Image (cartoon, rainbow, N blue to C red):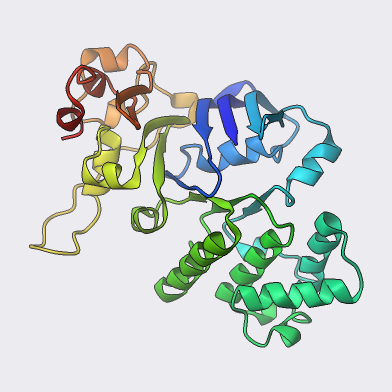
Length: 323
C-alpha cells in the first residue's frame, strides 16, 4: 500500500499535512506519537471512513489501485476484504444486541460469500484461531457476556474473516491489562506468520512497538517527523521529539533516575506554530525552527527525520549520522 501527500482538513482547518508512507507485504509497521498527532486520522482517511465534511486530498494506492475518490462499492470490497481495521475499544465497536458469532458471520457472508452451516463452521474456526475458549458456545454470546480481552479477540476474528492482506490495529491493547496485552500481541504475531498479512500497529506504547514492529514512523502535529527500522530508532533516535519520548520512559535496568517529561502540550490544529510544530517544546530549537517547517529528509539509508539539526548531518557517514 502506498500513501502519498495525504492531507485532511475539517471545516477548512488542516489536521494532516502531506503524509507519505508505504506498507510492504508481510511487513509490521508501527505508528507512534502522542494523542492528537494524526495516527488514527491517517488510516481513517486512507480507508474512506471520515465524514463527508472532511476534506481529503492526496493519493492512497493498494496494489496500484487508487482508493481516494473510489466508488463506495469498490471501497466496501476493500474494507474488510483487502484491508481490515481493529479499533481501540471493542465495546464500542461490537453491536451489544447481536450475538458475536452472528457479527462475525456477517463479515464472512459479505467478503467470502459463505452461508448457512459454512458460516457457523468458519466462525467457530476463527474463534478457535484467536484463542476464545469454548468457541461453539461463545458464538451465541453477547459482547457484555465476555471479558475485554475476549471481545478484543472477537474483533480480531471479525477482522480476519475477510482474509485481509493488511490489518490496521488502532491501539488494540489500550483497555487491557498487561497479561492480556501480551497475549493479544502474541496472537497477532502468530496470525501474521501463518497468514502472511501485513500489520500496521498504531500505539503510544513504545514498548509494544519495539517488541512487535520492524519499521517505525513517529508522528507529531499531523506530520511524520522520523522514520527508521525499529532497531535503529530505539538505539539512536534522531528527532528531538523521539528522544523525548524515549527519555520519558522508566529504565528497566540500572540505577533509577528521574524521568524527563516533554514540557508543554501538543498544539491543536488552530494553534499550530508557523515553523516546526515541535519547536515550542524543543530544548534544542534554533531561530530557523520557528520560521519554516523542516522537510522529512533522508539522513542515512532507511533513516529519515524532519529536523534542521538532523539535516545538517546529511553529509556525514552513516555511522556518524546515526550516533
